[in-house]
Amino acid sequence: MKNLYTMYGEDMQIAKYNASGNDFVIFHTFYELDRSKLAQELCHRQKGVGADGLIVLLPQGEYDFKWQFYNSDGSVASMCGNGTRACAHYAYTQGLAPKQMRFLTGAGVIQSEVIGSVVETELTTPKVLSESFEENGLTWHFCDTGVPHLVTFVEDVALFDKMIARQMRYKYNANVNYAMLEENALHVRTYERGVEDETLACGTGMAACFYSAYRQKRVGQNAKVYPRSGEELFMRIEDQTLFFKGAVQKVFETVWEH
Ligand SMILES: N[C@H](CCC[C@H](N)C(=O)O)C(=O)O
Image (cartoon, rainbow, N blue to C red; front, side, top):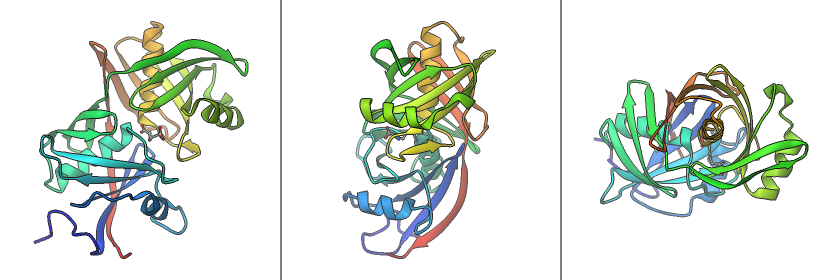
């Protein structure tokens, strides 16, 4: 019988997940430790498993669990939309939580529901962080969908400029998104803080683009969203609450001997 939680010091049973191109290493344990260095080690694309982030699930009294979330550079982030979808599927399939679960993140309580290989997450209440403003010849919208995001709408996401994105990321300490609107659909490219590069998908980034478009009445309450990976995800808003749905994939499980 596998230990429900991996005892500290033993070799760790870890899982690799892909959530629309945003990928994660996930494991569960009793022990809350600073895992910043472990995150860098596990997320390293050549020397480790390779991932955009590390998610560690821990026991939590009131909720199904709580998590630690680290970006691949070892920095801690309060939320990760795609990470909630991946860890909900992991928690359910590992018998750590029911299909409908509530867990504690750095941004507050998150609710997720597992429906086969699809997971829907209710995100934290979005917050506008500043008036829209002009910079680098673009109009920027600044909001928080669990973590801070800058959003600019362009004619074509091919106009995504990594140099400008990186400059805006450091100046505002935020993730940076370029979005293109189609008939009730958004194409999004994201430069992710803590990965320090463009990722193939960013959940809170897609939510920030959808929320910014909704506030400008450029999309309805439901929209399809396509990140750089091209996978199809669904965003909707109800009473100022954002819901984010899409498929996740457990790529493999292994033992990490450390
Ligand atoms: N890089 C983000 C955290 C991960 C967000 C992203 N992977 C998502 O799916 O929301 C930050 O440091 O603010």
